[in-house]
Structures are given as C-alpha cells and as structure tokens.
Length: 442
Image (tube, rainbow, N blue to C red):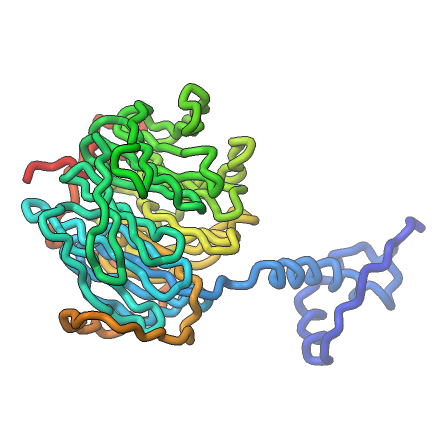
C-alpha cells in the first residue's frame, strides 16, 4: 500500500459534514489507496482547506470607490467591501479623473468639460457622507484633468491642459498657490511619488514627460519619450517612471535621473492608464483596444498576468467598438486589489492582483472613466472644519440599484467623447480612439 500523508481535519457541524459528503464524489480518491474510515476526511481537507485559506488571505478591501461617469456628468460612490452602490452625485460637465485624499476624507473629480465648452471646475466629495461638499472654480484655467493629493492632503496638484501647466491648489482656501509650467502641449495625466517632491506629467501632443518641482516654478524640465504619451505612473520611491504611448503602443520605463536608462514593453493596443502599487511590487496597465488588463512585476518588468475582460453586455457606443474598454485604474492601499473601469460596459471591476483574476464587478453610470480608492470605511466620522461659505451642494441622485449579472445595452448617448480613428493600430481587430484623445478643436 502506498505511503499516505494525513491532512488536517476541518472542524464542521453535522449539517456541514452532510453537505460536504454530497459535494465530494467517492471516486475522487481510489478506494484501494485510502482506508474507508478516513476517505472522506482526507478528501474534504484536500479540497476545501486551500479554498478556506485562500479566502482568509484575500478579504474584500475596506473602503470606498469613486467613479466618474463622463456622459452622465455624475460620480458613482461604491462600498469597496460589498460592491453596493451608496450614491450617485452630480458633478460638472464631462467629469474625467478622480483623486482621493490619503486620509480617505475627500475625493475630487476633475470636470474636463465637453466639446466646445472646456471645463474649469473641480467637484469635492465628502466620502463619509457620500455627498458633494463644494465646487472649486479654477477661474481662467481650462481643461483640468490629472490630479494627485500631495502629502498632508492640504495641497492638490492638477493639470490645466489648455494652459500647459500644473496648478497647486490649497484646499484650505480653495485658492491656487502656485502654477508650474510644463512647457509642453496637452499635459494630460500626472504622477507623484510617495514623498511628493516631484511631479511628472505626460504631454500627449509633444510625446514627452515634464519633471516638475512642486515648490519651485522654475525647476521644470522636459524629456522626450515616445509619440502621444498619455498614461503615466511612478514607483513610490520615484526611481522609475512608466509612460504609455498611444501611437507606438508601447510602455517606456525610464529613470528620471538618467533618462538614457530606459526599457520598453511592447505588444499593447493602447496602454491607456498605468498605476504602480503602493508597495512598489507591481504595475497595473489597462488596454482598451485589446480589452485587457496587464499586471507587470515592477522590479523585473516581467508580465505576471494578462486578463482578457469579458465582452458581454457591450455598449454599441463604446469608444472602442467591440471592446469592454478597460480604462481608469486605482489600487487599494494594501496593494492587493486594483479597480478598473469598463467604459464599454458601464461597470467597474475588482482585480485580485495576487491571483490575477477579476473577482467582482459593480454598475456605474454611462461611460465610466476615472476611479479612485478611498481607504476610509463607510462609517468614517466627518471632520468639520471652518471655512468660508460655499455654494449649496448639488442634489444627490437616487441610489443606483444593486449590481446586476448582465448589463442592458444603451441605445444612444447624448454626446461623443472623441472621434474614433481606425488606422491607429492597423493589425488589431478593433479600431482605437484618436491618438490625441483630448486634442480637439474648441
């Protein structure tokens, strides 16, 4: 008789044991190899113990997701632990990106605007109350887009695309305290390392990256990278900057202190967004053209997982026809979960970064784009602060229904975000958006 190793016994009640007996067929292990009196116990432990351990290792993230809905001019607020939609609130026209403060109290949505009407406001959301707190007017600065809270959560960096600048906004007074010129056209997205000592912007029209000092308006420099650079991410220590090229379909990883040192990752359709996890171990890259989410080892640059997003319930008006269009990316503070919006399905998905799988999805508004993860739980206290009177918050919409297994198609949308250009990536089965997604006539 072969040597057998006895596995640990699971503690369970009699009804649970009866359920397990029905679930595990007797032929799962040959009778001759295992004594009958321990047959079920061993097989039960072998089958269910790893699942129990795995479930304990991957608790759902505690916090809140805030998703911008471009076509609805709303933001969806979702409990990250349960997937339940808490509220949908009004924003300005054409909301794009979302940033969450480190303490989880606030989330800010950039109101980029629509064709012919550039936006110039930010919507501030009180995460604990799931409600709009106020709206910040940026004055003559237009097309706010990429954002990041600087350490301490009192200052916010936001790109002003039309003005070729990054604005430093003091949230205690809602005033712009510094304007950092990028020296390049269409400065769309930005990334900030953990220390907050530098700001990196991706400049689509110039195919470059600007390196800025948030405390010095004269210390900026620009580095040529590739064509149509939009996505950008940075390692927490600031030693590696990840840049996506819409036109060359590559991701360039460079050392900002020695720009000649760089690596190139290939095989993308459009590397649309890049986020490096807070622990610095992984980079998460969304690709709406191929309908994929990639997880890359940030140290070795080796791909760990490539997730093909299911193509059911696609919108006929998706920016990339025939694709679920994974776009916005955020990561939990423990680096275990990524959250990716599906513009082509009006949903947001939870990605288990350890296992490389989609674990859950929830509904959003029409054309979900930006997403942020707030680490504060739903019951986080609201910290009042003295401030000058602000305009009355916009009324909240009725809470959205619970997640549905399938999404009904939407027949038409009120306006298009950007025209599609088929020849962008010729070998691919679906056309991509225009290379300069935001470079449109005013």
